[in-house]
Image 1 (spheres, helix red, strand yellow):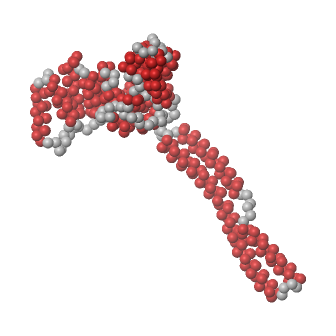
Image 2 (spheres, one colour):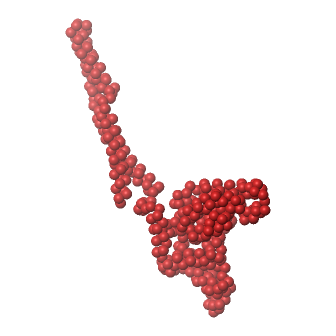
Image 3 (cartoon, rainbow, N blue to C red):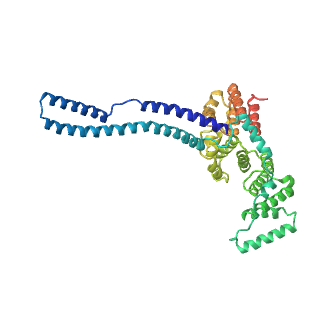
Length: 408
């Protein structure tokens, strides 16, 4: 509320200054055509009277001329009165118009460019607030309970419906059937019964025990998100992070972790994750379409001027691990000739556009191989600052720093 009071006060003060200038300018006397005509006609009347006195014209002729001049004088005087009234009203109208434009224009601009309803918070406070939101967000069960119960699609084929019923019965009588639970999770998901699919996938994880794959965990986390109507709960986050521990580059898990960060007030971190997924590709990955729909708005929230990259572009990846390994057997000149250009391109892109943590790590490792320790150390410090609140990214960057000899 205090923001609006200050904003309105400043707008009124500026409007008052401008209005005062308009009114003062409008009060200055400016000779008009009507006023000039009045002066001319009065002078002509006096001249006629002098001509009659001198006998230059006859009295009868003088009366006719006098009457015509008098008629024109009356018309000019009336026109002058109307101009003065209009000039008196114009400054006041202009002043009101200026103030209204200032108020309405400022409010409109803030509505589209600002964040109505949000208080002014420092970056540190916003990060702390986002962390609090993340910790206190609703649990999985609460999110599922807030949604309406599942209703089977009306257009579902009767034969398919009967087969699904048999599958449910079979799995219920064979609780240790791994393939049965995997198939049931797939089919329940296919018809949109995400809660049942999630429960089947959960049972599958327990049955597979030590044989659980990263994708199994990522699929379970995704089903938790779908069961909650697109909301990433603390339980879903745990499943997704468990998948990333086993496979840090798992695309679906990274997508939903980015979604969780966007939902809890960290669009900056979400943007870096999704931008990295776009650059990594492939184009037919299931997470690419939803990222493309949201990332430009996310970039705006993150304060980044963003242009969509080429999905899966090899140029965006910089030198590969194989390139770096091969360069170790070359002379310094040969190494610079082989990967110097790729390192320079990657460095320039990260400096101007930013990029995912793995690209920063690749650049640091490459510079270490090339012997550019000081530059690697400076970029390592920048990367630590850029990803200060992303533990997964910090692990990648520190590992690259240790490889380059610039981190402990």
